[in-house]
Length: 279
Image (cartoon, rainbow, N blue to C red; front, side, top):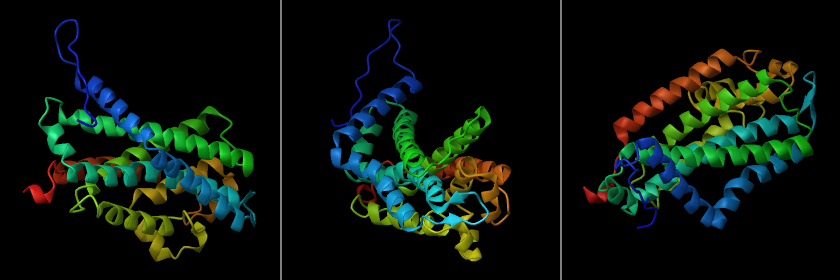
C-alpha cells in the first residue's frame, strides 16, 4: 500500500510510541513528496517567481521608511509561502487521500491516528523551512533584505514562524473535510487562500488596502504572519505603514496562538476519515 509504514518491535518487545510512528510517517510523506518532481518545483519556485515579479514591478523606495517595496515583498512572500506549504498543501493532499480511500485504509491499521497527523506536521515543517530558507537567500542576495543581526531578532522570527505554520497547518487539516471529492479540493482550498493574500497585505502594500478588507483579513493568520515578518526584516521606521503604527508583536502572538487552539478544535470537530460517498 502506498504510504505504508513498516514498524518493528523494540528490543523489549513493545511497539514504537506515537512520536516515533509520527516520525516514520513523516519520513514516508517526505519521500512521497520529493518523488513528485513537478510538485517539488512548483512548491519551491512559485513564491520565488512571484517575489521576482512583484519586486521588479514595484521597486520604488517607500518614503520615510528606509526600505523599498522590493524588501516589503520579501517578507510578504515568506508569509505566503508558509501558508502555502501548510494550509494549501494539507487542505488539498488530505482531501485527495480521503477520496482515494487512503485514510480509511490507514484507519484500519494499528497505527494511532495521532501518528498520521504528526507525520503531516513533519512534512509541513521540513518543506516550510526549506522554502523560507530559499526565499531568505534570494531576498537577501538580490534585494538586499537585512537579516536579523542579533539573537532577539531570530527568536522573534522563530516564534512567528512556528505559531504561524502550526495555525495554518491545523486550518488546512480542518478545511480538508470541506471538499466533497479530491477533484474539487483545489478549488475549495485555493480560492480562500488567494483572497486572503489580497486582503492581508501580500500582493498589495498594506497602506493601500481598504480598511474594511484589512479588518476582514485580521480575523485570519496570514495578515499577522505578514505583519510580524515585516517587523523582523524591515527597519523600525517602516512600522509607520502599519494601521496601528507599530508591529504589535503582542497581538500577533495572541491571534496566531488563538488560531493554533481554534484550529485544533476545528480539526477535532470536523475531520472525517471517510469521504461522503462512503457514507
